[in-house]
Length: 109
Length: 116
Image (cartoon, rainbow over all chains, first blue to last red; front, side):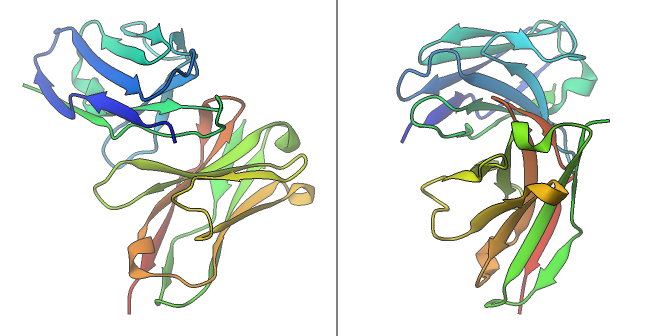
């Protein structure tokens, strides 16, 4: 099984800071990587798919990069409404599984 | 509007069976996978399995294989997640989500509480 490992598990940053979350796959997954945002008590929301493609309607301060085993989600200027837990997910690459990382909780300092 | 509407919250006793549903609308139900995701209280997202309603091709996470059954009735655009014998550890929020690749549309979630 391919495992997805995120770091850090939590972070605290100031409004306007640049925030970076990393996700590592235990084997290469090409660019079959998505990022989700889940605000407290809410349904998860797709932010980025194919490692770097922004889902329609998602603010441009969010960006994704990477390929193979190492991926990054960046928030260029943290806003109060970005307080949430962020998850990476490997999808549909061999083997066909849709495994999530353990999540990164983002808070405002 | 594309949406997935899940069945309502359930409270069950250990050992009981349960089937929850996820109805798709606003798109071709048979052209997208429907995945199921568990979120235990205060914990992260766990992928359970996925089904392609067009031909009922079903894949399970090894962690959930044999523990649950995923099915779909394409005639009514509905996917299902079922348990034959619930345990207290099945207490969680369960989400369905549409997938062409990533999970782009999510249901509102079904809270399942298993308690004696």
